[in-house]
Image (cartoon, rainbow, N blue to C red; front, side, top):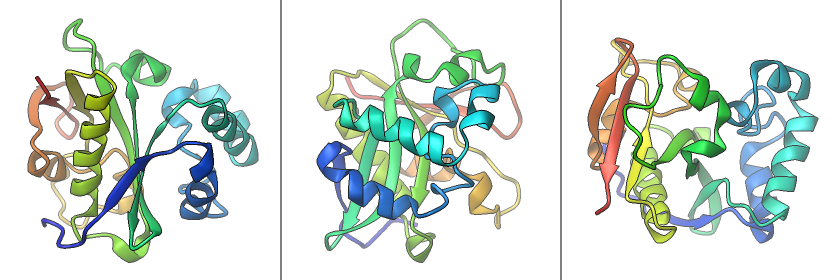
Length: 191
């Protein structure tokens, strides 16, 4: 579904911390993740779940690193997309299913989070497009995504945190590899 809502998206910087925190809520979007899953090893992630993950992502943002973009509808934060150079996501680098397909430098979209009141309205497509545009401003030539490609149309949103393949296709991505029946590797070529 293409969105008819106009989303304004911006890099998450320290002046947007409160909006980021409000969007993620008490639970850190999903069970204390705070979008740290791809940045840590399994044991580090489990040990830091909740408040420690929140503290680490806050430090990343306050140190002027941009871990992604936040989308607004009429000034209200409603969407998040984690996008950065692939090497910033060590867990992704170790993944057998999502291993590199070549040695080209890519930016990776590893997480999408949409406010539950705005899901199924095409917001994720808009966030993927905005993340790709942001990556382009940072010098990226290729943006990769690692969505799920569910057979069940009513796939639970909590398990679709990397996005849905159809949204990436609608945002201009194409499949370039697949090491698992339900996990394509998709790319958007900027130049």
